[in-house]
Length: 117
Image (cartoon, rainbow, N blue to C red; front, top):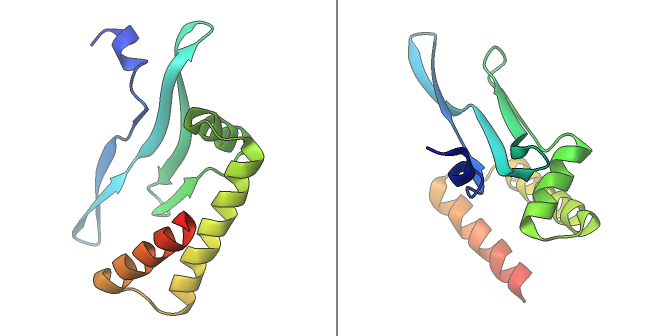
């Protein structure tokens, strides 16, 4: 695929398959934003999976958050505020023990409706 076509993609999410304790794990390896930069195609990683710890880091660096905010057309401050609000929502779900798929979907739908109002 020509590099100029890659620059039109919003982001790329390669998947990884790993084996742990006799189980197959499928994980998102990383999330990267693609775009045009000063030197052609620019790739900026905004999230990554640590296979050894089976942990995922996302938007931890200010530059990562700024890159995604820019891609979404948001001011960095607005983006950061929304990120904190969504993290608090997810923390509440975990603290309340909401884990069943239907319950999570219902809570997310209510959150979206609350946001839209």
